[in-house]
Length: 495
Image (cartoon, rainbow, N blue to C red; front, side):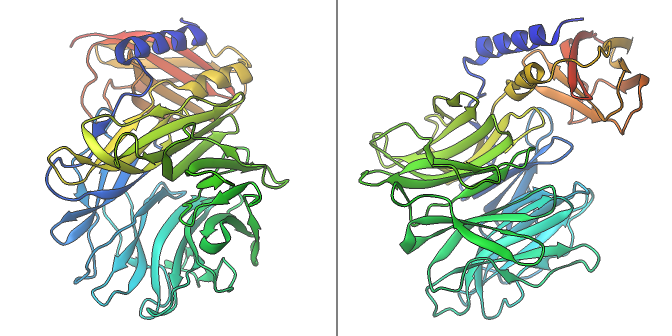
């Protein structure tokens, strides 16, 4: 059996040899036609399968989605609409609930220049009916929804003004009521002070409490508030405006890691600076820490950013930058670990221009997947993605959580394409098995129910997520159980 560190070192060496970087490089997700596909969003559920949704133009279906099949993205499909005569359905947001249903929320834009927020979910077989989120669609112009789940609660937040003549936005929120199958009464998150409160995002903790951030234009501030079960507490400023000014479209994003620590990124500038940068702050319950600059250039403008985190030392921020030799936008990423921010890496290449509005999600290894929209040379806007193959989070968790008891993981070849993974548990807990090919690409995973101490075996039929037989070759299995990990290698044969 290969030791875990040796296996990860081999995977890292193979990846760097094959690609020169853990990032696989910019690849197409969308159609490669003349349509305008924009504002993509990505999320990864408990099954570790990424989903992407975006605002497209395909007849009367203007929300598109695709799922990852293990080695490629599926053909895109339309989410569909129950309400005809819409102008468009922009700004989708995506998450998974406790039943692993896929939820999408978006803005409905109507011909009379009014907006409302709607949602629907995929239950594994079909999309639900369209469900109204905000309670007064005839008088409000609601837009920019963000949806998130945690602790058994599904929340949606959005910004709106109460009539088409108003120029000031407020942030509102609603919680899904599973028993009645409707969204609960909307509540105001931002104060009714006449300011422009917008560009909101939400994350929900393991107690089901929503945490919301937004920016307020004329105050150059990112604000934060949370719901304590009875009322919204706050708002509290994230940035100290004597040092860092938030952009009037700061587009803050928020994530909560497994330890309950809040992480926020936004666009802003230090006082006196000529260009915008990306800033970061965290809150472990004792208040917001001083803002750190993430982006490392000093002569270009950074605009839109997004954030994902699974541990305090595995925080990823992605953003777009304008002006490197032209007015085009480029997409960058940086990771924060125990030593600080890594050197930024560019995620797009020269097959497209105007690469922007990136969104990021982490898989079960803690590795990021990023989607964005861009203009391919000769085409309209389309959707692209990039992903990070090396499971750094898994490697470092081995150092932080030494093996608590050897599980004796072995792979027994039952037939040419069927493998039995055998292991012994010395402590009770939930078990997860992941299979990677020699490039580090995950091809299969299984999460077992709670296991008592004892000997167990789990079979793999040798098929990838797509259902196709995995090609013959060298593979690695990783067992995660009771805070420890073990890895073994095996060979699939030709039938």
